Amino acid sequence: MKILVAGMGTSGYAAAKLALDQKHAVSACDLSLADQLKVDLAPLLSRGMVFYGGSESPALLDGMEALILSPGVPRASALVKAALDRGIPVLGELEWGFRHAQGRIAAVTGSNGKSTTTTLLGRLMAAHVPDVRTGGNLGTPFCAMVEGSTPETWFVLEASSFQLESIEAFRAHVAVLLNVTPDHQDRYARFEDYAAAKDRVFMNQDPSDFAVFSASDPLAEAFGATAAGRHVRFSAAGPIPEGAFVREGRAVWVHDGREEVLFGLADLPLPGTHNIEDALAACLAARCAGVPATKIVPTLRAFTGLPHRLEKVGVVKGASVYNDSKATNTDAVLKALTAFDSGVILLLGGKDKGADWACLAGEVKARCKAVMAFGAARENVKAALAGTVRLEIFPSLKEATFRALDLARSGDSVVLSPACASFDEFKNFEDRGERFKAWVKEAGG
Image (cartoon, rainbow, N blue to C red; front, side, top):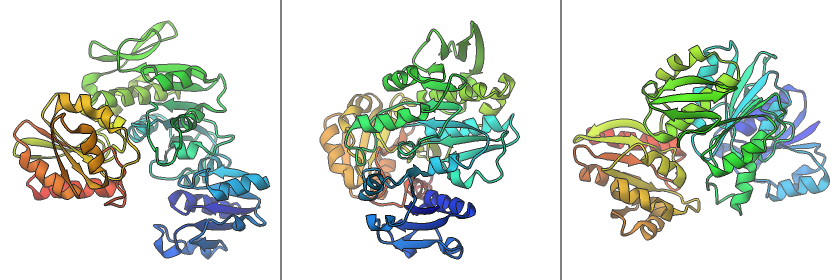
């Protein structure tokens, strides 16, 4: 086929390479020029790929038989609309990978907790299954994982709403929906559109599959309850009649007329209710995929979390400092705050994605002693949270960080949990987190 790949980030690159491996004629386009991309196109260009930099013009579709989308290219774009008008199939990178993969898939989505849950699930699976490949929106693109796969392979994939928008046949044998809360308001005109994309993780399942979902998140429960796969619920909010929950310091799973202890809370090294929820989801998904109960606790005890996810990075003047740079929406911040009772100096800000800052007011007032608002969103934070606790604003995260560390006293917690994208100052959330850790170290942490 003659294929056009739109968007040449890591996912688009992997999709184009897979298409070349399959002997298709490949063209690619991106709004950035070749020397502005994070990937080196030379290996693909040497194999015959044609690249159109600085353009996503519908004219590039002339003669094409399929359009493959990177997650960063929205379906509302003129290029996608033109392809659909011409009857050209539009496939996401996730769908393209699925069409060339053998084996089974466990897919994890949700507004928050995807990366932690996916990584933990991948490790739980690897404790029992010889060939487990973990990636997707987290790390390695699906298209870069499929080579050499067999019917015995398990793919553990983090799936974003951007990826799920453009699936057709993609099927998760174990599908996990953690939660659905407002995010990416800069891409979706309506919250309903964003939520509907999350619901697609259950698409194409049949009764032999498993739908694992939160019973305490209203939309996750509503979507999961209509899934074709076997329903497997979890909740950290309290007991549920059927599913996994916490009771007397233990995570238990009630199913098929019996009760199974998954793990003790003391076996989970990570703080916060949100990490309990993520662990419940990962352990349930692993059990549904056939991982023996005996493999759960040893793997869980060894799991210390991921960088930039409520990561303790130092102690300054007796105050603990945490890097939660991955928290790019307000719901993630609310979940992070559950790990602390009081004394939090919270750093909020960055590139605003249309956040409802007012929803933080109650938890901020209850658990924080101060808020340091920084970056492009600082005035929005100030307008919403003024009067709750001490609030100061700063043009940059660096200034906010050193002021927070100066204010901190023994027993306090300084927490970077920004509820924003990083692109006003940084390349990505990882860059933001690493810079924050360097400043903490500079301050003696």
